[in-house]
Image (tube, rainbow, N blue to C red; front, top):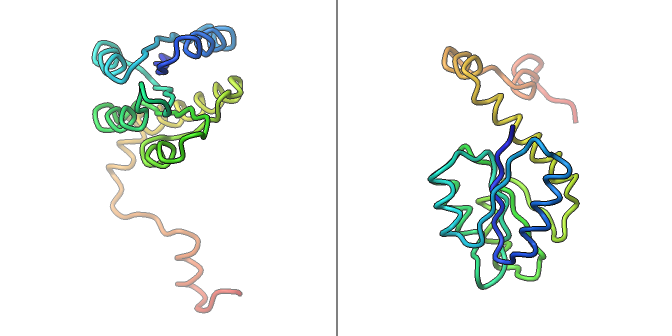
Length: 156
């Protein structure tokens, strides 16, 4: 079961996205926040797998929120919704988000991407993978490293 925190200053947008997610993924739990402060309170009270935040608008600086989430909750997946009307907000969000979606977004696509990202995160957090990586004595060579070491010149 996934726990998703939706953040948007517009109540109608929050309700619409929350309803669409409940229809497509009824097993997921969703919560909503209409400000960065409310989102950070929610994150401090419950474990979430992902935060989906709007980045635009005067009432919510989504890029600032996602930076706080990145720093305080690094295992939480960060997705960004944008209507692309504010290029500055979009550029500030680039380093702090895992994936961008335009508004309005295709919620089915959003669900698929979110599931893939969360699944990959879960694999990388598994104890067996961490133990395997921790026991490596040296990093394996990449194919490019091997082709240069074995045959000299690389093909054009």
